[in-house]
Amino acid sequence: MNKKPVTKILFVCLGNICRSPMAETIFNKIITEHHAQDDYVVDSAGLIGFHAGEPADIRMQRHARNHGYNITHISRKIREYDFDEYNYIVAMDDDNIRRLNDIAPTLEAQSKIVRMTDFCRKYSVSNVPDPYYGGYQDFEHVVSILEDACNGLFEESRQ
Ligand code: 4NP
Image 1 (cartoon, rainbow, N blue to C red):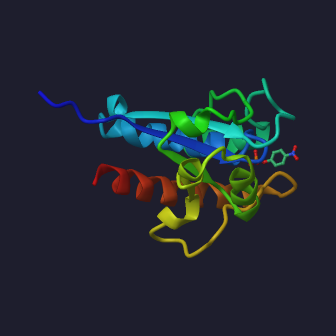
Image 2 (cartoon, protein in one colour):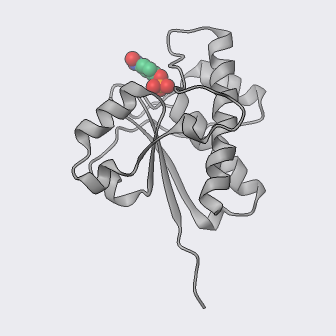
């Protein structure tokens, strides 16, 4: 019997303490609700290692909880072999895409880089804005865009 291949998704942002761990958590909830956990490997990573080893930003954790999510991810920096390991390297903004293209070891690796907001169905935006220096509404906006994009990415990856 043929087994469906596992889809491996790595969400990436700058620090891996706000946007990408939130995206990972939302996506994990979606696949759990669809009983599809066995079909996916999901992780997140940052382009800088400044917060490596730390849990998600306390503000992001609070907004996550208010929307019914629990972020358990510990920050880590992206590694070169992540480009081999994952099918989708999902970037949050233009700066992430630039940096990912700089460190992608091959053209095939570059071809795996996708833009998170391209999976949005409701929002018409091209970046998930960095909320680190922002306020309450900025974090709420991040959760809303990521929920929209994660649902779109899930649908697309099922086809
Ligand atoms: P993230 O947010 O990329 O969504 O995790 C940031 C977290 C930390 C920093 C910048 C953005 N920082 O400069 O430390």
